Image (cartoon, rainbow, N blue to C red):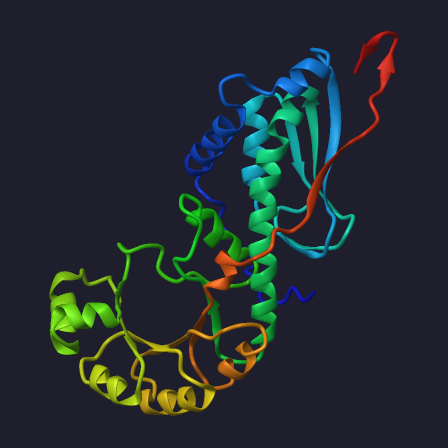
Length: 298
């Protein structure tokens, strides 16, 4: 798996955001009685060492979230990264964990759920990014994310070498077909959006045909979303735009079609599958054999 193109510096997610999501996940898992299996089977005070390791090739993401899971359960847990993000092969150690065995077992599933999902998204994104290498096209995500996990999933896209589209309804204007119908036409929709949006807010309009594109271009928007167009039509659209705004291809994008779409010269290709259909990357937590000294486990 290629690794070129992944950003050299990736800013971490805000810790309060991580902690809030992890606490909610732990509360869901622990319920009203806590980890009854671990409480019944593991003696108090048992100390364990473990590794988090990849079981399949892919791109790692989510170390900071997994670390938070272990340390929220027990602040004394040591979690050391071998790779915070980046390519991995089967058997590669991602992190080493040491601490109270009960705490490690209680946090395990929440930590691996976050890391496996985020790494799966990063891995799929990497495949799309590799498929368009050498073209001008950027692979971008969408808002088709799991409720409550958008920030984590979009972070994972960045880990895989992709880029983020708007974060939500609040940070960019995207005028789609139903907005145009409800507003009474393209001109009314764009004019109202421009009047309402701040000077830092971009305006993008969705089009399905070259005639619609021609109309939109008369209003000097920042980007056009070329929806469900064939590669042949996309080429004509890019030529028609002639650099007057950014072009985004959307719809019908998969690993079999993305290279042809990128070859049309579009600036961005949005792929909902990055977040709504990425398979989880298989990552596991494996305990080392416990050392004993007399009758007390260390």
